[in-house]
Length: 199
Image (tube, rainbow, N blue to C red; front, side):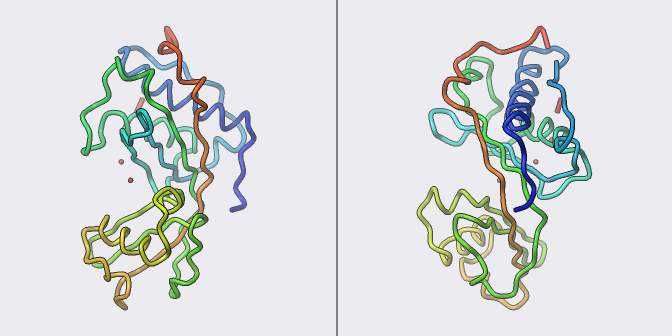
């Protein structure tokens, strides 16, 4: 993936995501970190929340016309408060969550599943009106091979596990730039006397 972020830009995005959640929990106006350069590039992104390593929310956009920093603001709030798999985040959980951001490359349709490199590529799969997506890091975290990764993406789309072999199934791949908070960055009170929509 050619898109790159400097360490300071990654840190700014993580602070932005946390501020998006904190300001909502504290019912105040957000105090956004400065944003410039690559952070103003239109780009898809996912924000993942974990509490003691367990998934607590994950929502993103495969692509977006909005600047990356705005996408992260929206996805962070959505992951915290709008993921239908979880109840909305409570203020007493704020210090317990770890934030991870995945910035996405553009989708590239493939016709040979052997092009998928486990650990490098994420999968976006569509058949009819159903679609599912799994991020690149999921296969590595779960120890899946390529076939299992495809089957799990089918399951995510609500399709039979072998649907990826159907000629009318569209498979696209993408890469992700993944980064997250260190444990020490999470042990703090909500920031600021310092807005927010859909893994």
